[in-house]
Image (cartoon, rainbow, N blue to C red; front, side, top):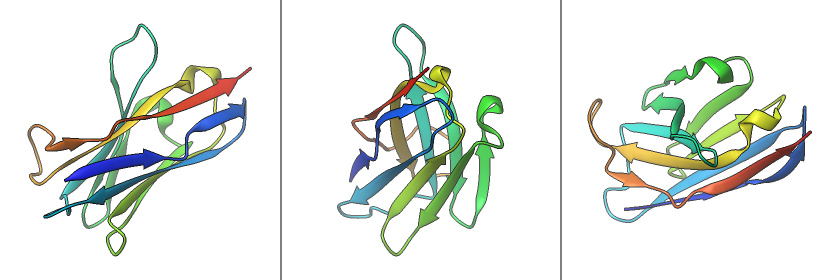
Length: 117
């Protein structure tokens, strides 16, 4: 199974971006899809999780600004980011797993998001 992110780019502070993660390959349906990010020199940070059925969770600094959504007909999960801040600058990765807990089965290659001040 492959995960491919898209939608990254350069945006000004206060702007919005929509990232998309497409899953392809056999058994490409995951129970849990998540977004992570990693800024230069920092550890990878959890951003949001979507559990098939609609349960979502967000990191504290993302609540109220980011929304994760899923389209099972297209095998995609999107991350809509509003009111972006320079500290949101990072490479964003999506990940998927077939079980509710545990390690992820697949990761995407990442997409760069840069927020200018």
